[in-house]
Length: 232
Image 1 (spheres, rainbow, N blue to C red):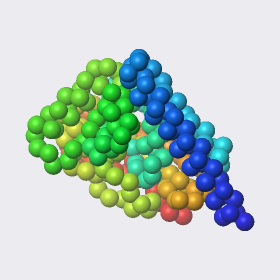
Image 2: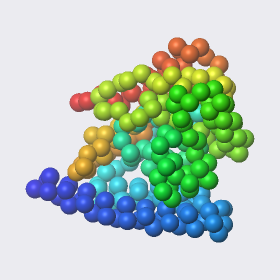
Image 3: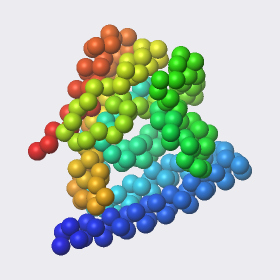
């Protein structure tokens, strides 16, 4: 019976959240055409709508352990499910997120994401692409926006601790920003077709200063984002 209730909740979540997302993506496209100032509030509303569905439909409590950082800073977040990616515009004010290039090919969403200020990450595309990405990142910092990166590069299974992508250390060095690592344990409840009630916790780690050697910053970030990633 518990599984059946979770199934019903999950079906209701998919209908409500993704149905609302279609409407909000459409509103974002209209905002780009009519008045770009409307875009950021719409994106924030999308994150808020997702949280409402997560808490009230799925029965998942979301808590924050620690104080979320203010820019200028590079925020490194553990990536276990779509939850933290969708929640980012609610969690931070106008975040500039490093996102995979493929995502920008999604009709409507991709163009809206570019206008909003997300930063495409095209791996193995050469020095010119890296320079463009870095220039965009610096521009977002100058705009007073926090930079958010998922340093593992993709979603990883709960209980696993892959190394960080090589590009993370390069960005850290070139941007010369402190790093705030954030752990999240979204997979046990959210990363299933039939999602489960429970709790998702964000744990904000200690700020890591700029200018550290690559080995040290990678080790500290890797340890901090994995503090909740222990089954049992």
